[in-house]
Length: 493
Image (cartoon, rainbow, N blue to C red):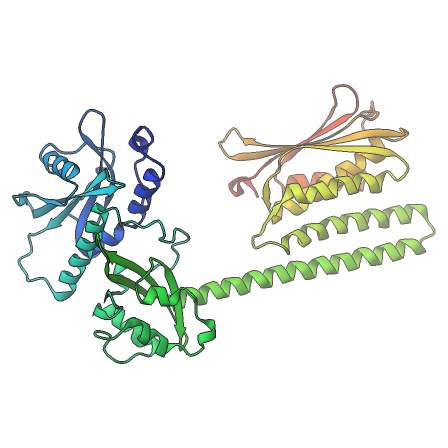
């Protein structure tokens, strides 16, 4: 749930943790809107004496009474007196008159949220009263639960900083199943979905009147695998989440203790069947492991090919043949390095800076066994998809080798630079500029026939990277090779 934060950032009276507390409230108040069958609006004071709406929540258990979003707008004149009264009294205030519109009748309540004795904001609850039917037991229980939570907000007891703030994937919601416990952990009420969830676990008896801790304990087959948070969740003592599994069914549980000024008088336990979600997660884990294993095996096979080429080169008598096999071995090793990097991660992206740091120095050393060649790298490549990383690594390898063998030919020492810069292109997409330069003899006065290495470079840049490449003299002497390529897939062939 988003929150309009500009007024909070400019508020001078906020103490440590106040802004985080309001964010925690908004992150969890869909729960209250669903329980209350009402729209909720969060109002924050402005210096000129009025209020601005920071957030708005619509119930998923009922229809909304506000079809337009008013986040960021000033409070209506007819609503401000009620909010002012709640702000000053620090108690829940109800409008003395039913708020009638052309379509609905609403009951409006203003609930001040207090922390450390100071009112930080006021929540207004807008409930539709136009329906003439008698509320069901479920609706009455839900509304009582909502009132208890809002009452805790006026006492500074909710939201609780102990509430988990991690991933909400699989977190139970009101509609998934709700169980209300008394102070001893005995079930006072269980919604139909809550009953169904525990029946899928294997409990066929009525939940009401039985301790939830005993119910869950009886369902567990292997108690050695029990989460240590389970006892505190099923008794409603701590605002935590846990999961139980039985008969192939996984149930996510979340507890919300209910307190007043003196003691804990009960708890809400939300439950959700997450069996299908966990099955899909296991499939993804298995898929990721399979992909990593494939990359690992490809890397091993390529290293085997490189070793065979090395063995073959030792048997060659022709120096030209030995050089050709050495170059092929170097190219195969470059591809193997990319697959080795992919085999160690969970995504199909490569941290290219880490990969090229190893490859850049190695390429220069292999190409200059009798020279003192220094390498320097500047800029950041960042993460690149594997279908770009492999050809780009090969291109850089060839350009560095060419710079050492031809640009620095006849010199005892020299420097090869590698620079990377990510930037926005003319069309707004992200581009990458790669420059390989040296302080060698520079470009020949007349074009010469390209060898296999430069032919590979041109082919990869044009067909695999969908980029351009340009050779120019380097200021101060030497050669500079620039590659311009797009990183967004829409421009790639």
